[in-house]
Picture 1: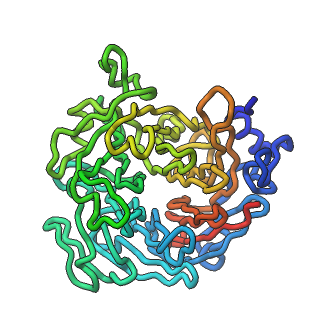
Picture 2: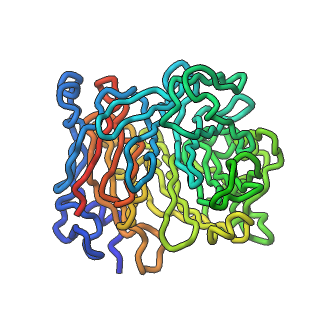
Length: 449
């Protein structure tokens, strides 16, 4: 019998001694002492600049190394390069306007960084692909000028390139020819991306509901030629976009408000030429969520399962957000839409664990790391730092939800973002952004037992 998520969260808050931690199945978190509560006091600019390690407080057993404390303030998601097994670099998006650096190359040993590309509009998600490239997107809204997906080969020999968003061209610097626009994937506010080894890609639109219009939908890109080892060219160059529409009653006519979970279908997006996917959500009655943010892929079990955070609205509405997981059969079925997709709630937010943003799947342990991006001074809670939570997978109990979460880090200023594990699941890299120093701070967290 599982201990409910809310109870485990409260036990963590209260320091409940009945919850054990470690490396065994009965001790699922790997920290010696979870944090009882969020930070209740922000440190100032002077102290944070002198001691960036004090921007975070960690659970017992964990240690932090400051990789770089002078990154651009809006550095967000990153991808390890050249591999998760032996990462030497973090290639990171900078979520800011086109006249600022958009893509950075950070040396994980020295912390030194260089600008790969400027000109992007709020570069946010980035992923490494099975065919040896990086894909990254813009959180820049939908429509004809909305966010696009780009692809980069050879990131170590590409520096100082400029993107002209209006013309869709890359120039200057070194390696401009290494970039490509993937127009068939469509335009929206890119935030979450999960790409399979065959080139099938799942992604979400970071949009909120607006006067009856649905929030952001979940999409799926199926390549015309799914990737196989040794294949030349990117599978993302040509393909078809599908949107998730939930509802199965009498042939699927019960879609719309009220059908947020359960089974459904992948609906082909009608426009195939640089499609506006934000517009397609309303026009084709796709299932919308409240600002779906980051997304990661559950690599266990041999089946396709992606989890996406629905961030919610803490201060204005006390909507704490959720993490929703979508299953889509096997990898082989994904390319032919041969399975029935199903969405189910995985983590339900509450006043302690609220406004989930970035997600990171922890290899081997199978836990999910939830990054909060909440209102740190709310009417309900007063000042409270944003936290990092470790949430167990679902166990053998009847439900499909996490078997519990604990807080393993809290921010004494700023917000955690862009977390990613190496292949061992014991080295966790994340950025503290929006803090008083005016810089983004990159950390490496170790010490999981």
